[in-house]
Image (cartoon, rainbow, N blue to C red; front, side, top):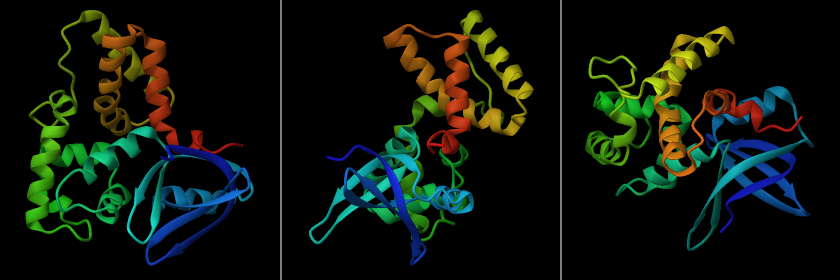
Length: 225
């Protein structure tokens, strides 16, 4: 299984509303389908012959091998979760991430916004219902930290952790990130915070800030200068 790739960008192109890159890795050329947002970033910045890193999902079919590339491990894992839902193929799963960020999908699940989900090509009312139901069960840990009134708030009992969250918000604001960006990223990084707290015991303000900025700047951080 190919998990990720780091190599030289040889070419990029669009075909049938799909976006591809060709990456030279140790003399082999890997054709990878990528998200439109990353494709446009590569095209705009004209970084041909530069090295890039992508997390890969390898899907083997009877007549082909497909590689789907992501700029973060979370995008890849989210894509895999979507594919586990009955009736959702790789192109529909990729279309969801092409149209919405992970936080936007999670918010649509929380609000049961089937109309928004059904704006993705290939998703009808029945599949929309199934996506909301099954993804709601898969992402309970993210959803439980979103206030029912629609505001992104955290229900954390530990005062020390609450203080770090507040300090994190202020620091990100001072770095010119918008309140909308900050609110949408907090539910996502909280899962990582919970993971570190339980397994690595290294929860700290520095780690929170690094994690938040990695997500906020994930596209640029995956392009080698």
